[in-house]
Image 1: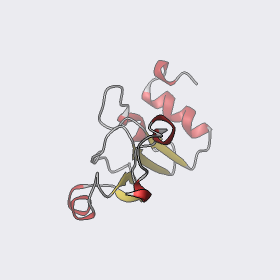
Image 2: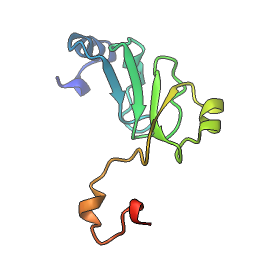
Image 3: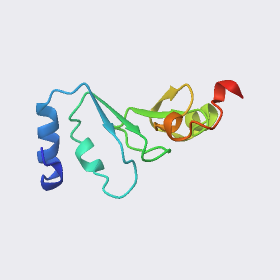
Image 4: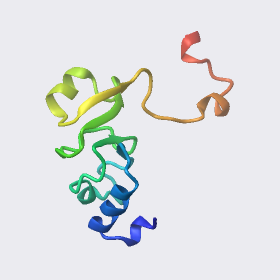
Length: 109
């Protein structure tokens, strides 16, 4: 699909047609965000991840995928509208092991 060319309603229908179980928003409140299409609830579970380490404050976003450093549990409980799904280490996915092979791994610190 060429979602940028579709309206939010059209994009939501296209996503719904894929019968996804989980839809993950990768941009949060950043440029290019299309929160309006999540109002149509094109997937039964909707989550926010990566592009914004804060709450979306949108009731249709069910989960925030973060780590405890970015969203400490007391802060998340008080400030986030989403339920938290915590990554055990960092919520940022990167190929640091290859890029920074000379740096010690956290398990060796």
